[in-house]
Image (cartoon, rainbow over all chains, first blue to last red; front, side, top):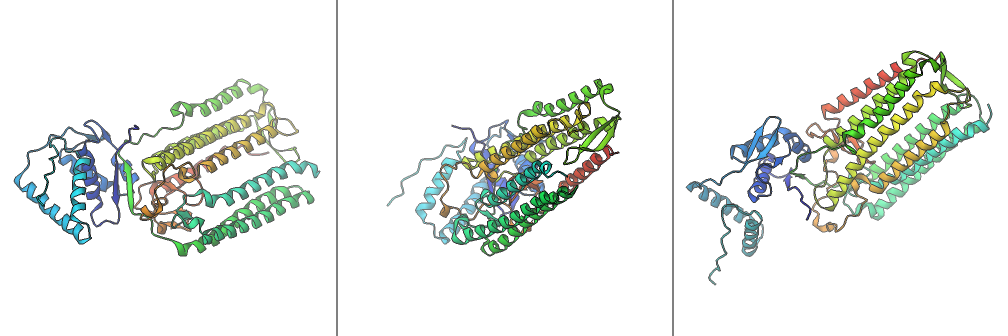
Length: 144
Length: 371
């Protein structure tokens, strides 16, 4: 199988800020392990050219990922993926993500997506973005 | 002037006009399927009845202008006046170019009502950009080595160069321009060849480094990578061609004869074969490699919006000139034609144009004055 580099996608018409889309897309790639510690990301300018966005937009996404501990940014050496240990979860993190998930579910249901489809998509997403230090829990059979 | 002597140059010019005619007729089918006369359209529009009608009218206009241009050129055979052939050659090329542009402009205006918004999706592969010129940097040394060898040979045989030697010949084969045995007179061709070869190398590198791939991944992404490699290879091939041409021109002082420059006919044949070969390759690939086998194509209904070249129509002036100050790419794919063009909204584009003008001025200064 040909070893292809992971691909990130953004939507310039999305209400989400472009740097936020780049940040989320890169974080997904990094969490999934598609890029290993030591791997080089494209330079800020190269990624900006490929995505057709201002280089400051890409620089901001890289900067935030570096703050999260994912990247090592050094002048002239581009962005290198670090071996980031999974931090201990903060109590407020679970409730923050639960709230975001609830909003996303509400948006999906309002658009006509069924509960079964939502559950299947969540399951698939967990498997696609394999959590390195957290085993994917087995699905419990819901009581009928 | 003997009419027979004009047949060869007129024949060559006629071949050039026919080549331009064929190229102009083919271009609309060589572009990305979702770009028709530089307008973003649904991928099926090109093969629709309206699309084919527009193409037919365009080709008819191109053929008419080309036939008129060829007639103007051939009039030179019946008016064998000195200098007339040169004038009608220029006029015929200009007339055909104008005709192609007018045909394109009319066709584009007919396509514009069918324009759709291109996709707003952008994608990029997370791999470091490794700009590799075809053949590597070692291959870049070839043209300069050839020119340097010619310069060394000229220096070693300086005394064998006549004090005054022909450097330009008229259509009748008689010399009508001379240079003297000075540094500029003797070494100008190899210096000019070196400058132009360096320009081609710089262009190949810049284009691969500062342009944006449209498709990433899959067969279409691989085809596009092959196309980008082809464009780089063409520029390197042109670099070698220029080095050979200017090496040949540089060595003329050692063998210039009154009856025309030696090796002129083989040189012209080589040039034509080289040009036709490159055109054939580019036609085979199509813009962005879109004419190469696609494999399993994405069904049209799954494509929400046309991808095109991932630039918006509003940034294209007349469909030919791209001007977008928010786009960091220095080069973008041409919308009508094969290859790339400058993003004139990028400051680097104007530096590039300025450098070209400076090189032209330098060449004019280097060219020995005719006596």
